[in-house]
Every structure is written in C-alpha cells, then in structure tokens.
Length: 411
Image 1 (tube, rainbow, N blue to C red):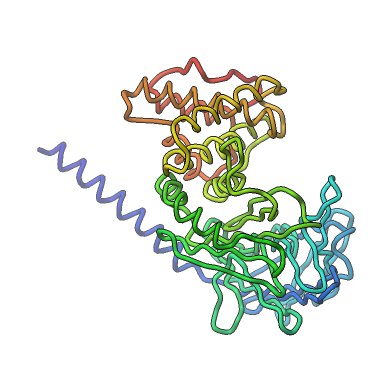
Image 2 (image 1 turned 90 degrees about the horizontal axis):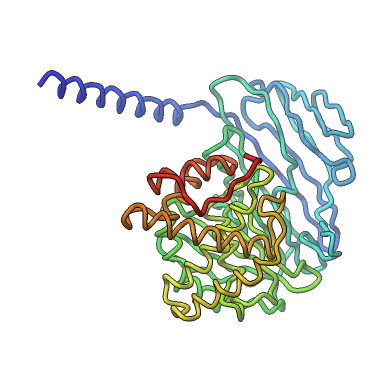
C-alpha cells in the first residue's frame, strides 16, 4: 500500500513540476521586434528595418550572418560592425533599429530562380528578408515579433503567418526564444484559393496567369492530406502552397509552414509519386539531418508520399507495388546511401531500405509498431537526424536488432 502511495505522490509531484515549468515559460516577459520591408515592383532590392519596439535594453547584441554580396548599406542606431562574416549590432537602450538593403533575387546553379521580383509579382522566402541571427539577451526573456510588408499599390500577398487587424503579420516560433520570419511569401497580382482540411487551413496562391491549378490542388489535398495528418498529429495549423512558372526553378522546395512548386510539376507523376506530397512531408516533419543522414530525411519524404497515395486510396495496390518496383530498379544505380546529399537514385534506394525496415518492425512487433512510430518520434524530437538515432528508434520499435538496417561508419 505504501509503495502504491509513494508512486502516486511521485507522479503527482512530477506532474506539478511540468505544469509549473509550462506556466513559467508562458509567463516569460517579452520584448518587441518589428520587421519592416519595403518592396518595389520590378526591383529585386528591398529595404528592411529591424526595430526593437519594446525593452531594447534586454538585448545585449545581435549578430546577423549576412552575406555581404546580398545584404548591403547598413545603417541604424547604436554600434554595429560590418565584416565579411556578417554584422554585429549592439542596440541602444532607446530608439533601437538596424536598416539594410537585401537582394531578393536568388538564382540556383541551374540558372533558374527560387526568388524573383517582377513588375507584377514577387516570390521569395522570408528567410531571405532577415539573415540568420544569433542573439545575447537578458536571461528569462523572449521576443514577440511582427512583420510588416509595404507593397506597391494594388498588390496583395499570401504568407504562412497569421495576420493582425492592422495588417501586420505575427511571427511566432514556439521552439525558439527569438522569432525570425521563415517560409514562402508571394505578393503582387495574385490569385488564391483556401479551404480547411481537418485542422489545417490550406491556401494555394500564385501570380495570375501562371497556370497554377489551385482548385485541382485543393481537391487533391482534400483527398490525401488527412492520411498525413493522421500520421503526424502535430501537422501545422496553416499550410501555404505557392507556385509559378518560368523563370522560376522547375522543382519544389519546402519551408516552415509552406512550400513552393513549379506550375509544370504534376500533382501525380506517371510513376505514381507526388512532388507536392513529398514536400508536404518535409513541412510536416520539419526535419534536418547531419552529414551522411540525408538519405533518411529524403527517403522518408518520398516513402510517405507514396504511402499517403496508397493509404488514401488514390492509387491501387497494383500501382503502389509498381511504384516501389520502379524505385528499386532506379536505386540499383545509386551512389553511397550515406552521401552528404540524397537525391535521385540515392533517394530511390533509401525508399526500398525504409520499406524493408518497416516490414521487419511490423513482423518483430507483431504488427504493434511500424516505421510510422519512428517517423513520429523523429518529428517530435525536433533535432537533426543522425544515423545513430534512427537506428536506436527503429531497433526500439522492433524490440531487437534489424537485419535490414544499413551499417554506416558516420553517425
């Protein structure tokens, strides 16, 4: 009896400490940050200002990892030093702001763009507005950030951020004490279609005249997204899909709460894979990897894009089997699985390895566990994925060592 009482008291004490920790986090005092950007039609150079609107004295310094070829003309209050490695800013205790110019035009090695400003529209990542930043702030505080975009007359915008009645955008990353805008933005003469699917508000947005199949995408996601939401219960509350045709890059790229896809990419390819769903898996997981483990991140995205199509009934059992057979054939031509970057044949091979691991976990656990449990845990941990951690979680799900697990010297 005493033993049971002791266990109960220990549980209640632990629960109380967790609740107290959550309450303290919620009550953490905040200082204000306002990001303001001025964008002009046809001009890729935007003006950006970072202002500490409330309690600037709580911020000791901010170091922006700003590429000098992209970020120029710094000015502001307080002391700042511009070097080849970035900008170190010591804000003053009053009227603290730092202003600079940034080139939003971004060209990939193929020569096509993943950031562009035309006379009629602009498409870029919010990450490019504000470079990555390190910050030294008063202990026990956190930021409360907003973004304001000044656009040409007649332009509208679509972003992954909630909007205040003032028109400013709320920038909030619960996993970080300092908030910086990330994710895709499209602005200009655009068309949008939105719908609520499960608990997610989905918006499809693109410049007018770019042949973006907005309603087709919404219909496709109404059919398939519930399977992904079931797999990843913490699926984002907001999902923005932006797209455009040439001169944008003929591929797809994910970002927090959003993704870009070229308008020529089909919703469902002839080989029964889906670029759109592949990128949405990336959005759902928000996963990164250490060198040598990218096969896990890219493999999971491709594996679950096919699983989603199959589980939702979008493709038949026969088509599902053929998709895996085609990937297996392609994977036979791959380089090392633990290459620094996984694409093409390497990702195809990774899908086969993951499928074998899933089958072995299901068999070893009597159907009680699967690769789904491993993917969820990796997502919940929110840490860069390593081969070692993936192996640990898969082994735990199977209840023993896995014959299908690759052996790598890199963790």
